[in-house]
Image 1 (cartoon, rainbow, N blue to C red):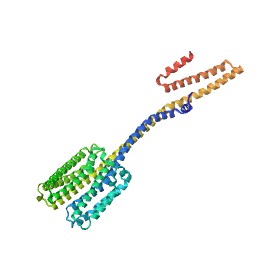
Image 2 (cartoon, one colour):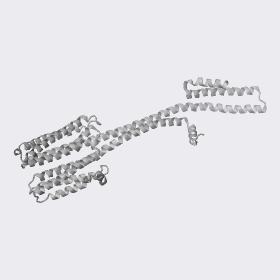
Image 3 (tube, rainbow, N blue to C red):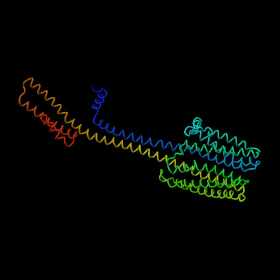
Image 4 (cartoon, rainbow, N blue to C red):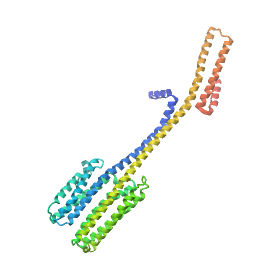
Length: 446
């Protein structure tokens, strides 16, 4: 017993025209093309969204790095100034950090959920101390405590508090790198820029501040152990510089293989790296001189050298960060272009199939319509002739002449119908149609 749905479907298909059936057939085979096009386009969408998320994370990194540089500068000042002069030395550097942290809070508010900076996400990760607003409040508290007259003991405590705020900012930079997928960047050129902006340079800024603090202690009469520790810090800074130079080289060498060449990449990175490297070499020489013979360097010279190096480091970071945005924009444009091309070519394939189906449908239906026109008169005459024969039989008045006329008319239209059948067979079964029709006729005669 056939299912009602099967019967209804078969009945519907039987009632459909040949053209409709051809279009349904083409649509059936076009469906996989559409599905593949959708899957291909859907594959580009997550990659585009990932790059956009990286840009959001990168936007937050900028004010955080500016703030980190300012906090570390204040830490260096509080560690080397005379108690009576500390407040005056710190005051000019407070406003830039205030502005940078305000910008960071604004950027964080724009992407709270995307960068997992909302309170619930931070609590889940056990990083409540990395809330940008909380860091901003900690900074304000430390800055307020640094105003007025300070004692030597105050300096030590404030230096530790500055260091804590700097550590929180550095941790937040790393956290945003994880939550924005910067740390998982898939392209070689941008990945090595991320290595500079997210990992190496923030660590280098902290090491510069640490080395400066150690240098001040050595200049104040530190032990041989602390001088050896300073020499070790010099070695670590040199390795950091070499790592950044290597990352810079890989970025430039692999740029062409990742979504096309960025014309601004090398002109922006190379001069900034050269300035940074030259300044670092000079600072390392100064720090090594302090470790070897503290009498050769003054505290003022060390402070000036540290300030120049931190600024050169930040300048290189800014150049790398801007170019990272450029590479991400190029990647997004490339993915969007590929997605549009995939959808466009798929649409063209479907349209081409539909047009071909239209032509094939016409090539089939037009001859069939002509055959219908040929068969219709014969079918009508056959009905009329049958009626005339039946009437003559009933009246028993037929004569041979009338019968001959009827037979001639039937033979003429029978020939026309045989020709139409041959044409129909040729369209349905191709070149083998005459043999099929002849065989069918022989079977009937038998």
